[in-house]
Image 1: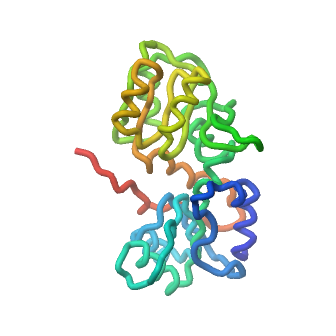
Image 2: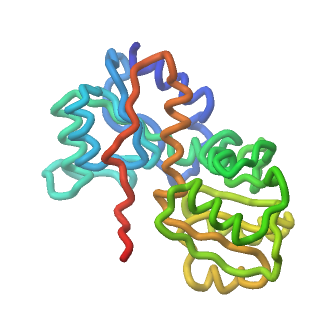
Image 3: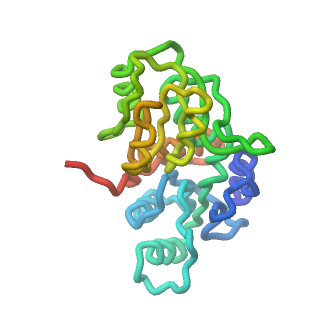
Length: 255
């Protein structure tokens, strides 16, 4: 299967034209006419992930976060990004990243988060005029006690730990979610009467502002978005051989 055909499948769900203006979603390295043998699916492109692709015989890496974000001014091997780009070029590995193009579709990153905790009927939390946007909101299958809900979130996401605020509620049902750094949408979740809001990278004052008003559930950025690999796998199922990276891990460790 040629690379362009694979990109067409992904972009039929997450068009590049809807990515945020500051983003760099799309093809990072490679020739759209190249024949693809197998693809490695990952959240981040790291040296360990590229080495894994080489061992597995994958000549395509599909990632959520772009390998080239702010742009490279040289290729001297002085940064991890430069070394990854050099490795990919030397081994004929293409790299494609979906990032905010996939963030902004209903069945994208945040939608997959919702499905992991049992929410099936959800809508965009912050829609634009074309009804695409960031985050989702929906209801749990049944009202759930807060301790049980928090345990469910931690287990469903495989989180080493989560942080949360209290709201005074004992039961939650309406849940808002946003993959990645979504603290800025806490007020949107509150306005739409969410009982809890799950996202990542909340700062101290973000949590302070939420305390007593909504259960803000904060987790590691990678943990909130690694299910994107499942989206890629579902899109390409039966079309090309795919592997989910075993070297794709959060850089954050806890003691």
